[in-house]
Image (cartoon, rainbow, N blue to C red):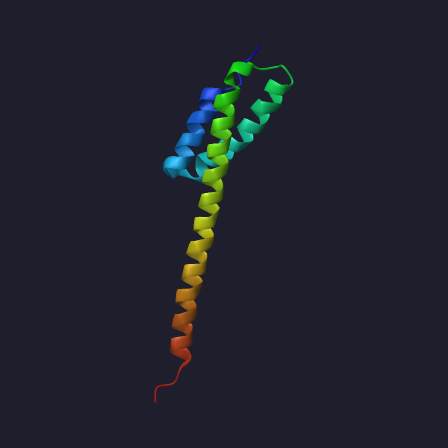
Length: 93
């Protein structure tokens, strides 16, 4: 039986959650899906399932949080630039 890279997936998930966001979260998510398919098919070591699931979940959560943070930044800058443009368009009295 081959290894399902459970330790690697868990490390990628932890790294994504402590500051690397999508950079390691997306690979943890994708590799976790593939590893779980291998485990369910009996091609990989089932004792690594808990590490794979934990790494995959951490990767998913970190990716979603990073995407929300990007949306928040975009909204914030759009609001700032919108207010600046509105203020610049007002004629002085």
